[in-house]
Structure formats: structure tokens, C-alpha cells
Image 1 (tube, rainbow, N blue to C red):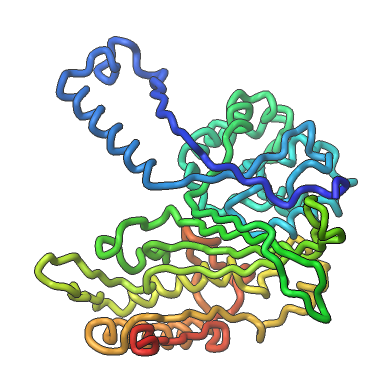
Image 2 (cartoon, one colour; image 1 turned 90 degrees about the vertical axis):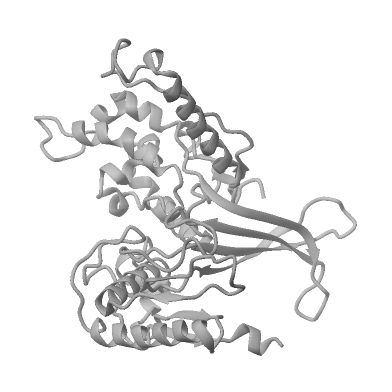
Length: 411
């Protein structure tokens, strides 16, 4: 339907260029000037650049088409304009934005993805969510451009209040408007899959989109990177979303696309077991030994931080206090009993893997028992600050551990 906005517009990065930028504080005759680099330094720089280019080749980077200032109110703006967020969050933001559209005076200002980083009130006033840091792979480059704006966002007259005019005149703001959040992901698309006719369906088909977002935290190959770090980030973490678009083909004989009838999305995450453990590769052993950390406090804190991050991003009761649609039926009907994260454990129940699974089960039980009623403030790079008013309670009913011995069950 041309009157409705498109759902999503994804683009894949086909080529990358590394552009050197000289620090203005380093004059041409400085020791850090490229002109004065020795042969050994030139060789080392070339080696580092070669390694960096090779690492880029191991990833497929995707981004969503951004909403331009001139088209922010037009129907051509996609619903999903941030590839780091799942479809549900994008729908909530898009719906809330159009509900508040009449109260927003400057659409060209509020559409910018980086505004929430410098104005924390924008999440409440404009319903704009910060880019998911787990899947924001060019975040460090963007944050370097945000620092000058953060240092100069206030003037003498406005005090601590954000001054839009000062920010809009900043050259860094102009550069940030050309910075688009990208994520390392796998994207698969299957079109026009027919649905067998029945008493409920007739002449329907569906399009399927599979998006697997790869976390930038604790990346590494198998065996070389395992477990969690001190902030709760686990190795090889990925969020996989399956989107099904149900299409109603009113004229099966026509080659035209059907009308979008329903949208379904299923999200699940995967990652290494959130404990401090390692399994270094050994060419002499088919199955490398598993080494488990012995500090119980360190184990409990790492698992706690990981659980709080998962509950923050995926718990239904988060909508009670943090949803864009705070007055919607979704948030009113979401209760504390409905909060649950199911952790499916696929390792063996014997040997080293059995020890690891038993340790995880015991640490999880201890975490839910100790931190179930109260927990101190902390900040994880995977999620938000764990103040009591921003996270659901860690109770035995909020997390379920399912140990499914994959090799034993699938013999």
C-alpha cells in the first residue's frame, strides 16, 4: 500500500576504505608525522592495516536506510531505521513517534540517532531509543565525534539545558549526520513462499527474513574465546530474529505483490555459557580440557550481570516503566509472573562438559537466591545501569534453565 510506510530497508556494505586522518595537534615535523616515519614504522603500519582489512573481510556489515530531515514526515520513511534493534522495538518507537508527532516542533532534529546520547530527556520526550551498543560496530568512531558536542552543548544562558541551535551549528553534528550505525550480521531473505489453502487461509503467501546480529563484545573464534567477562558479556553472542510477512494475494493470476496482512517476529539469542571458564585448543587432544574459574563471587557477578542484561533487553515487564507505549494494553497486561528468560543448555551431561553444566546450574541457583530480592547498583556494557527501578526482579520464576543434552537426545 503506497499510503503506508515501508517496513524495512536494509543495505549491505560492499566495500570499505580506511582513510588516515592526521591529528591537528601533530605538526608536519612531528615524530608522529607520516613524513618522518622510519622504514620499520612504515612496514609495521602496513602490516597493521593489512590485518585490519583482513578482519573486515570476515564480516558482512548491514545498515538501515536513515530517515533524512526532509523526508522525516513523509510516508516513504521505513518503520525500521535502526538495524541494531529488533522489529518489536522499532514498531513501538515508530508508533510512539507518530502519537507525539503533533508535539514535536523540530522533526529534523529529533530524527537523528545520536540525539539521545547528548540529551537523556529525548527518550521520554521524543520516544527515541539509543542504538543498541551490543550491535553498534562503529560506535567508537561515533563517540569520538560526540565528545566535542557533549563538551559544548551548554551555553551560559541555557545552563544545563541542551541548546539545539548550538548543536546544529557544530561541524561535528554535520559529520554525525553522515554516520550510520552498522552491525555485523547475516541476512537471509526468502520471497513468495506459498501457504497451503485451508478453511482459515486462501491465496496467501509469506516472505521470510532472517537477521542474525553479532555482538561486538568478546568476539573471537571457538576455543580461543569462552565464557563471560567482568561485565556480563559472553563470547560469540548473537541475536537471531526471524520475521514472517503474511501476504494476501487478492489476484493469484497477477504477478503483482500481495498486500501485507500480518507480521510475525521471533527473537532468540545465543552465546557461550556465562561463567568464567576456558577451553584452550590443544592439537594433541580431540576434546580440549575445560578449565572453570574457582572464585565463586566472580562467577556469581558475571552471571548476574549477564542475566540483568538479558532481562533488560528482552523482558516483557520492562514495558511497565521503560516502554515507549507506557499507556498501551501491552504494558498494562505485563505482570511480574510473566517475566522469564529460558536458557537452553546443549552441552553433554558427562565429562568436562558435565562439570561445566553442573557448575552453571549451581551458580544460577545461588544468583537467583542471593540477588532475587535486592542487588547493588552496577553498570554493564551489555545493558543499562542496574538500579532497582530499571530492571525486573531476579526471582526463581524469572529465569529457567533447560539442560538438553543434544548429542544424547539426537543419537
